[in-house]
Length: 331
Image (tube, rainbow, N blue to C red; front, side):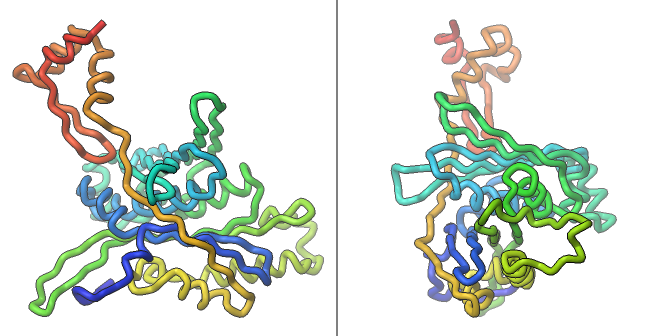
């Protein structure tokens, strides 16, 4: 995707989640647009492009689901698989103290040699990178509440397909999702270029009536005519499937314009957008507490020339400690 440098584009359409409702079809939905936020996450890790793409999709999906929480808490998306990208983690935490509705972060774990082999053979799809395993959604409402976790098998068609299975099995809500992530290349008038990461997502869900739709019809029902509700849902899903990656990533395309293109014939209503920000919970003291839990003997083993270096896996911040300062407070 190519874009000219500069430009006066509206920064307010980035790092947001835009809720909407298609009034004529009894369908609700959300659009996610991630700009500087996802670029900060991915650039700080400097992952290979194939890994950054799939983590960018995971961040967009997590933002979309996290902002749907009706309470203060945290939603964590995690994959575990036998592919070269063994783990993806993205989490969203509500933030009621600032302008942002919530804070987002994420990281990936991968086998560099296996990843290089996949890339050499052109096997860079999400299914090839993640392999066989599971996707888990964990919702944490705080220390006084029980955690909820839903788990589904990884679908070889990607994270969106895995999310479809999650909603069908755990939430029993007819859901359709599109995800995209990629680098935006810019160049100035002299031909000098730079790139930054972007990610986007769009989701529609059926507003259930009388038990709602599961999104699937039983084999014995295939011959019967569709109900009005099923026809409406099929129309919304078909329209969503026309969305292309560049429409979810284009910094010049406001979410409202995309919604109008897709659903204006059915009457679409956009609600106030919810802002997102990068947020990591690491701190020098929190990392120190983890190190102190190992005890003095283990601290001595970890120390190199009297110092211990710890790097946060989410934000890549490096913390340095003298072994003496950790031992001073070791129980």
